[in-house]
Amino acid sequence: MADLKMDDIRAMSPDQMEDTILNLKKERFNLRFQRATGQLENTSRLREARRDIARIKTVAAQKRAADSKKK
Image 1: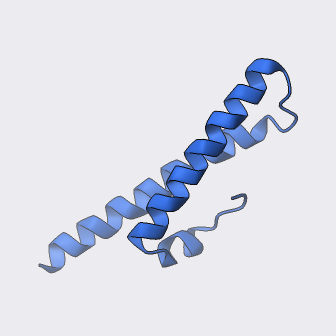
Image 2 (image 1 turned 45 degrees about the vertical axis):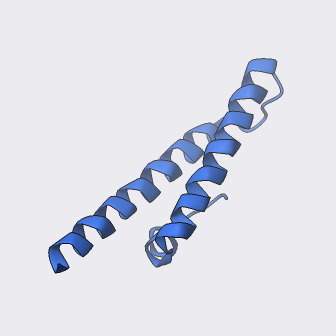
């Protein structure tokens, strides 16, 4: 899931966004578990996953706002 670009996120359908968010949340949980047990090697990935989730949610909200204005 690494290296999500804004153009890629904007090209996603709402279903793809939800699936990606779900996968990122699972990854974030696993990373937090690894950190707690001292097995996490790439500590910056936690921050990246959290920010990727926020980016996707932001684009989804923008799309919903744009769709509601069209109606």
